[in-house]
Image (cartoon, rainbow, N blue to C red):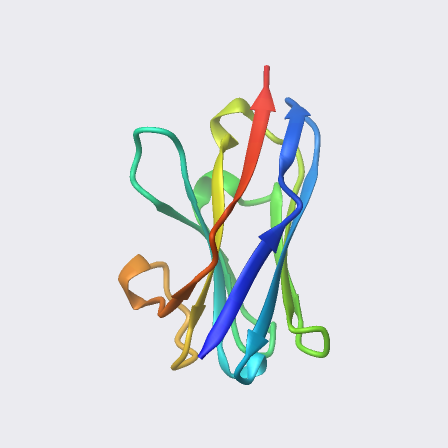
Amino acid sequence: QVQLVESGGGLVQAGGSLRLSCAASGSTFSSYAMAWFRQAPGKEREFVAAISRSGGTTMYRDSVKGRFTISRDNDKNTVYLQMNGLKPDDTAVYYCAAERSGILTMRLINYDYWGQGTQAAVSS
């Protein structure tokens, strides 16, 4: 089992940047595929980005490609989401998730462990 704790959220103006972190503890971090999801008020939780066990493969939702970068440091048991060029539509609670079989997927139901989320708000 793994415990996930997100940090790094905040309030920024449009065009600004935030770097989210997700610290994992418990089981072997490097055995999990990791992802970020987000949920805006009144909307369903949606996929943002995912990264393979080694960090060599990544995937993104179309609306964040070129602006967001997911990365991981297996020595520090941490996954990151660098968010640049933020837009008001990026306002949401951002959740870190872990997939224990190591499969890289956008499907929410495949992820086994979740953090409690960190709020990111972008003003226009």
